[in-house]
Amino acid sequence: MLIVSRRDAESILIRPGEDIDPSMTLADLFSNGPIEITIFSSNSKRVKMGVQAPEQLSIWRKGSEAA
Image (cartoon, rainbow, N blue to C red; front, side, top):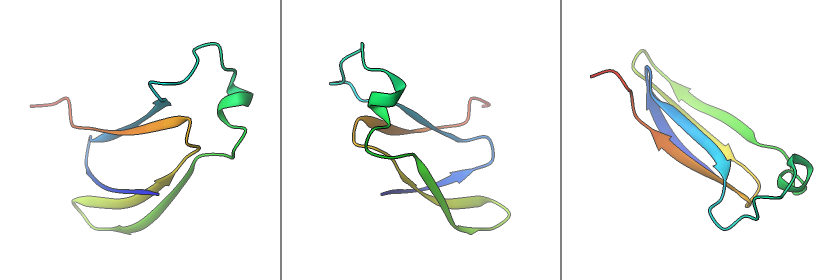
């Protein structure tokens, strides 16, 4: 499980891993189970969450696009 904190307008990206065969179907990607997101805590500025996903998927932090 990856645990991340995100602020307002920040994101996470979940996509196929770099070493995954591009011809895999969604059924293949999720054959080991679903994506599960658990919220551990939150306050007015941040949310702390855990993301558990099949090993075929990679999870990336993405910052705010606003500057």
